[in-house]
Image (cartoon, rainbow, N blue to C red; front, side):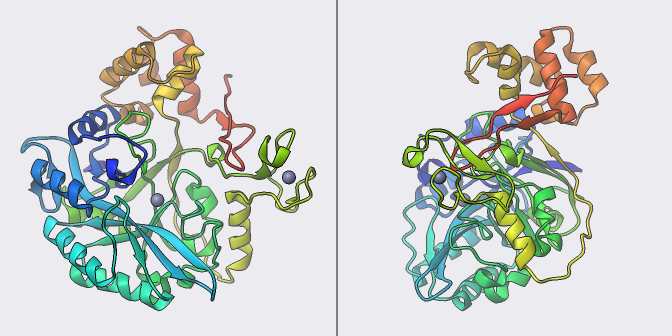
Length: 412
Ligand SMILES: [Zn+2]
Ligand SMILES: [Zn+2]
């Protein structure tokens, strides 16, 4: 069976948002077509209580709000591992855990006591004294329950394993001995498989894509997701699929949209009168102030490509598709800015009802989309959807130094 997974999210306890209810998440999962969702923050005592009170285990390691529900949850959290990488530099690395049972979640919380973790925020910090201790901590987690899945989150963002904050060259430079246990990497919004293939250590690992959402809004949940093929619905099968050979395709943001894709200095920063940016990695000094640009992901990847002295060929075919949240596509087609206006949502709901789900739309053939949607969609909106479906869009200028890239859709 084919499953759409979105296995990295956050609850209201990670800051930034108000209350998120599991019922509202389920409603958005249905519209999007997400089958299995990571609960986020499952080690946080309050959120864990909510999860325990609301979710029932319907298959091994798989939870739902009702016995006969068709939307499923996996216990999941993100943790921040921090450790010194040199005498006076500490690196923080966001890392996702998928946890097979409430019992295992409780055991991890108990383990936290040994490491002095203040488990009071959604995304707990684990402070370690050396790279050796990072590895030991992760091996200890695995010894609690070998089914726990551990993968580095959004690996190219500043707080990702290969990000620009206190940069390192190899996975081993932070994860130590545990690096060889890491089988899957999260692409994050700022990178996609095509970019990651330039990094030798990425080539021998799988890629997973998740939304990392902090909200149940339909342009957040499932904004990135992963399709897997599994024999049956269970935690074990899903773990096997993402760490083994079950990934069918990932659905990704265009990394050029990301706030730190190119290198640059944005308008207004230190009195820069206009935007200065560069995609050319030989050209990284700002022509205005003469200082090095804020480094973008594109440049970081080129660095890793050069610095990782490993001869690892590109082995796997990476299937992926670039998408834009459908409400954004509709708003673009209508020429309006508000994604949540009644008009946009009314069109969104009609499309989702007709195509089964938003993912159903992206997976359908063009002829089917035209056949089903042309009756009720305005010409411009349909044209915009078909252009995005074909991949005829770009972000120009791309994002840099905290500015998002600007969406441009091509019609021809
Ligand atoms: Zn994170
Ligand atoms: Zn400058």
